[in-house]
Amino acid sequence: MTTKSDNEVAPSGETLERMTENMRKIEELSTRLQKVLTNRQTHEPSLDSPSHDLFGRAAQAYWAEAMHNPAKLLEHQMAYWTDTMKHFVQAQHTLAKGKLAAPEDKGPSDRRFTNPLWDTHPYFNFIKQQYLINAQALAQAVADVTDLDPTEKNRLNYFARQIIDMMSPTNFLATNPDALEKAIKTEGQSLVDGLENLIRDLEANKGELVVKLADETAFELGRNIATTPGKVVFRNRMMELIQYAPSTDQVHKVPLVIYPPWINKFYILDLKAQNSLVKWIVDQGYTVFVVSWINPDATYRDVGMEDYIVDGYLAALREIKDITGEKQVNAVGYCIAGTTLALTLSLLKQKGDKSIKSATFFTALTDFSDQGEFTPFLTDDFIDGIEKEVAVKGMLQSMIMARTFSFLRSNDLIYTPAIKSYMMGETPPAFDLLYWNGDGANLPAKMATQYLRGLCQRNELADGGFELMGHRLLLSEVDVPLCAIACETDHIAAWKDSYRGVQQMGSKDKTFIMTQSGHIAGIVNPPNRNKYGHYTNPDMTLDHKDWLAQAEFHEGSWWPRWETWLKSRSGKHVPARHPGDSAHSVLCDAPGTYVAIKAIS
Image 1 (tube, rainbow, N blue to C red):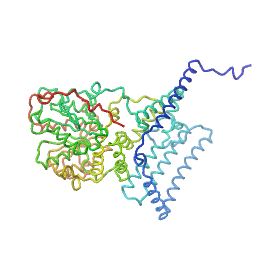
Image 2: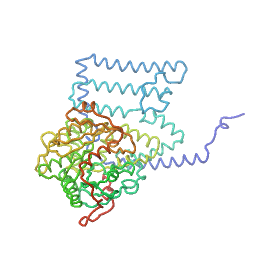
Image 3: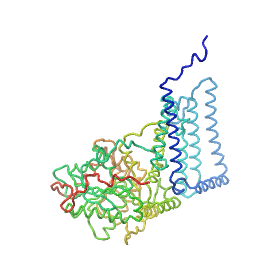
Image 4: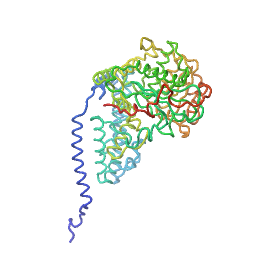
């Protein structure tokens, strides 16, 4: 006779040992988790959560509309309940046939739901379809709120989208088939590894949950990232000036300086040899300088936009002219550095200084009249919170900015990486661009306030003038030959807004190029990949829709087209210049020391 105990298979010694080790690790991780959450740093509450007033006003507007037009509320409720009951009946009908299967109508496709179980398993399919019904109902309810001004409506749309994205069943272990399958396959090891990844990220950010996007151990500045040969030839409290070694026997006479954004590090333009814009420009025969900004701490609290201009832009121009013996320099400004390049050009115009021969703007905003997706972060309550935060800490921390940008693409930059790291227990990928994305920089308190209030919120550069250093700086005074590069799907600097700003510049010699892809991939688009094309249209009197409708599309990278434009403004060839001169001794190798300073939290 066979008993139940005879059929039971006792766990092997190896399995018991692994279970014991995992229990020990979970105890240790639980202690670490409790400690990090107990010591979590705090921020201004308005920076951590949406305004309750906004939802209150939205609810008030919704119910006011319902009282005025009850048919609309009834229509919403009937549509929601009809979809929900139809979904429920379909599932019941299939089960009543004795089939453990999903209904034939599997619902709309969504890249979050690629696991076949979302379509074939009745449990997961039911959850997926009900989530999509709920999401559509919420989105429609928000779309039909009419008694809100456009800014508040924009904010409401943003926060509703955040709620919809956050509540996706893929974000919860019990309703994520990928995570459950891996947990079973690894006998729970993936969950232990995921918990360890979670606690590691919390500890690295003093209790703030910032998902690590890349394996930080895979990269080292100067070894396998930011490797283009060069030297630091000048340093002050704001920046290091890098001059890159020539790779050609001759170079164009007029040197080129690149001002990268100081929200991030400059090496986005020098990730690796295959996609380095810096190396590519050097190889075309130019003397290239790049500004590497300081990563400020609280001692920089009183540093403003004027300091970036005087000790950054103007200091770099002065040193470059001294080193090369040239009277003029071609300049590039990327993102916020492009905005500040426009300020600098207006200042130079008023002073009669012609140091900049031509200007190139990479994804730069100079007219902020349409705040687009940033509307939720440019209202008074949010910026009031920023001002209180920086008043205490002396700087706007990189983590706050990174989180803000991430929530603009929450599925790609928050939830998907979190699922892979915390539920699946995966190690972040060794991806250079994501490594750079996580290597952020702080902003000085004064500068952050000036930028957010004066430029972003009040749009002073395009509307009346931005007051700085006793000057009223105007967009119309940007009158040097210019080329602007914007990106078609840029969620930070929308191409139509970049275009509108360039239209208002005073230059009679303008070129506008719109490249495919977004804020980073559109710019870091080397010719050897032949990945993204670009659009051109010389008629900048058109509005943005007509400009694009009449534009010519070109296959491949915009880099060669821009270089042709730059070449015609860079003079004849001269013998190649090597970094420094008798008055500018080499301070260290590129990429320098400032770029290695990590953001302080």
